[in-house]
Length: 272
Image (cartoon, rainbow, N blue to C red; front, side):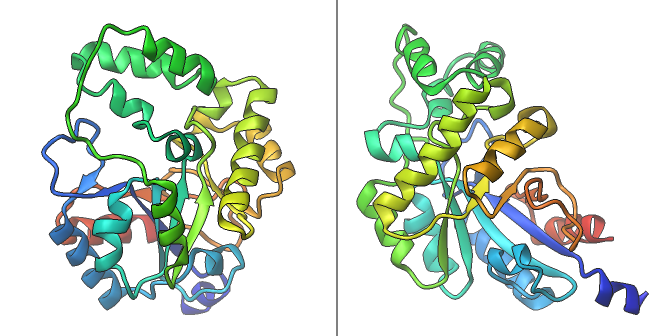
């Protein structure tokens, strides 16, 4: 068994979204700062924490863990980074909200009745960004609740300049890519990469698919991501990563407001 583990080292990629004390969390995305700190203590004690690129390049020890954030909330800089100052992290950024200063589209509809919100969310995630914005604009709905906000451009550049931080792409507008025509998928993938590289002055080679489940990522999506020039792309399928894992369908485990012992249990289950 030890020989097999040396030949086939196992690793896990964790996904966070927000680190915040917020009480407004209808999607269960936020992890409290105290909980995040305890997660990192657990991980540092029991696992090698490595840059995400080490996993992509197959340079890691058995049991290695990489930490990622999806979307690009401002609290990734203000709350998460001070706690994770000595830990390598990758932040996958949705580009348009950072450029236009608006809220993420799912936060725009978060205050709607939960039953209606679920149906509306399902419809909106399969639309191109321009059409989605138009649909949301027609809603007779006003909601000023604080559910977090995207990074500003200055904050993104600040985050990208910090030691141990890598910025990856999370598309332009955060759709379910597999539900879009190929031309729209290509735009979401290629333009997001190009805009981030222009804004940051460095290559952007890693991608996280929005939503990231099998229905959100097709073989066509993976091929378009490859052709857009990414080195690798990540799903949210909660499995271990091994050297044979496909580079454009790499797994990740989404983390919620969990006690550290539950996180440890989920890691053991996925790594087994």
